[in-house]
Length: 179
Length: 94
Image (cartoon, rainbow over all chains, first blue to last red; front, side, top):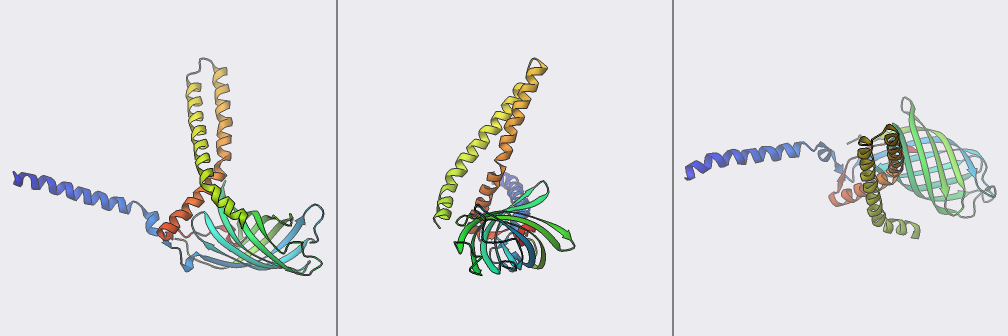
């Protein structure tokens, strides 16, 4: 009887092994996942913006040109940690913030929502009441020419209640490989 | 800090409510479309399809929240496995 069982059991075992191998190979997304600590997750660049400020009553900050460095660390497909440090030449005010971003791809365009904590310093006459505050924002970006990008962002400070709209250009300097 | 901790604390409840809402909407749209197919006259069929389209708009408007919850799930999986896709996005330098 055993002699009859073995030939039948062997193909079943092989079929199961092949099925398992195919199942593993059929998940390339997992195979491409990389460690959360990986240098390819980093992106770094510089940029310049025109900033407009809006609040009621009018904020102490005037429309200005600002420039600075910006970076991001891709955590997952939809989530990134980001940060920037900029200096506004009109108000002589610097600004820096770490942010958590949720990326959205809608109608072929790239958007993101941000939650950040902004620090501000500089010319005391132009500084808003709170020098650090939570801010929320909506961001948009698209490639413009070669590696140059154009971007539009609106951020709102939850304590100062000032909205800042920024339109600017970005030059990526180092962007890790996608996995 | 309270703002952030409150937000994170409410996310699981929001996820349950949103998933239930989207399921009900999807089921309702499918049922209305099925009724429209069996409608005895063209006028009723048009009304039912218009109602289904309005519900579809509501469903689409929940997409943003759905992406946010998807993002939370991605982070959870990334923390559990220590791995995740590494993809850059045009908004990274904004």
